[in-house]
Length: 429
Ligand code: PMP
Image 1 (spheres, rainbow, N blue to C red):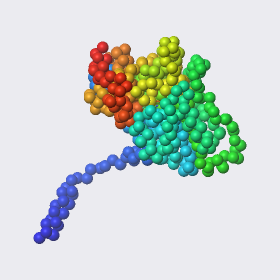
Image 2 (cartoon, protein in one colour):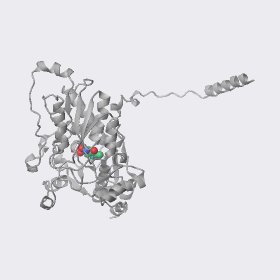
Image 3 (cartoon, protein in one colour):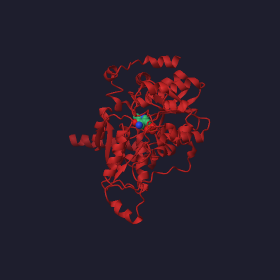
Image 4 (tube, rainbow, N blue to C red):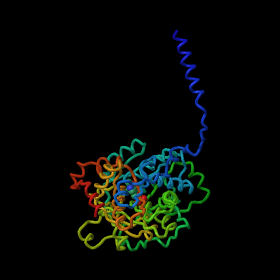
């Protein structure tokens, strides 16, 4: 009968299982990470096969797009929040709000880490940033405020600072002090920047509150301006994280490190750490057109005369590349300026071509700053001998850039040519 058939089947299944000799399973508790924050950092370094094979130089990309918030900025958000907590400026689950001006990645990271740690998040963004970043931020429960695309004065940063003060930011602003491990003689002379707006001149008054007032402040909701451009926690996220990871992953067998700079935290923090560990290593900046950093690195001026005459000075760089390029020296960039050996200026067409080339050859769907970095890697590889190794940062994925950098329509409307063969020619040259 049916019940006999079921019993027989069950007996056979049990017998089959019993016949398989038990295999010892190694229980490794380090394979379980502690919440979302446990997913941040320790990203793999991937060999970009198409470029490495064509060049005979190994091009290695740090897969930062694998962070839970989708970009390299998760490291920075975590470090900024942790350092602020350690200083008593932020207290979780008290209704405290993080404020930041950002083109997107940092906002998404602050919202992600903020939610995991018990903070609300308010992001101020220029209104020409790719719409999908706003949508992600809103889904993450962040409040988004739009401002005009920045001109000389960085409106989004100033508004974020103002909002944090309005929300009762502790006026006890004691900016995270530089770690004595880092030689501060590398700091840029800010007078060289001339009449550039120096946002490191904090608008927040430095008042030391009596110790007695502190416990009262701790229970109240507070605002906190993350200040990624000037806050040195950004630099230290890379000095203590990204840099040591790359050194370990390459066993120190590395000839150059390439990175772009938005706040400058990545190139300065990672660059400083790697240069100290490997003094022969070259640190190279990849800079989009319109950014002033190329001239700063090459000629120690922010603008050449032609640019001064021809173009209105803009704070925000006029390029389809989002996240890198800037026209002032930030505190985070200045910490690493003296370790940067060289710079390449990358055109929008080159970055677009590289992104399409990588999808076609490697199945890698990357954002615009990653593409810029890889163009710089190819140029640099041409100057290094075969068998050399270059590491760079793959900051985020293409999904953050669908409506601009990855939109053929948008590129055509903005007269940006889409021609992946630019990369073939670059590789052959
Ligand atoms: N790539 C992307 C996509 C970014 O959002 C940023 C940060 N603005 C960077 C690169 C540059 O990193 P950093 O701010 O450390 O210079």
